[in-house]
Amino acid sequence: MQKSSSQSHLLRRLLRKHRLHDGVYVRVAKRLGVHPSYVSKVASGRTVSPEIYRALLKELQRIERM
Image (tube, rainbow, N blue to C red; front, side, top):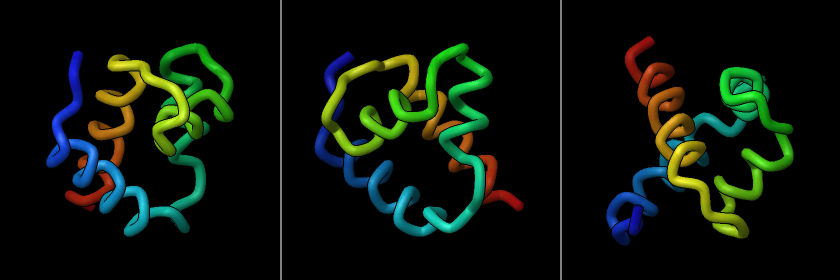
């Protein structure tokens, strides 16, 4: 999956907004069976994983609706 610039911007914006929301990376990591540091690397753009990227967006959008 090729991320568009607008998708990357959306993820970064949501992450900044919810950075203080405890457990975002941990919840996504548990859901996908990976380490939270790997989720962090995907969120920062150091690693590419479409599955984790989608899960992060889904979790952050869920938080947005709260």
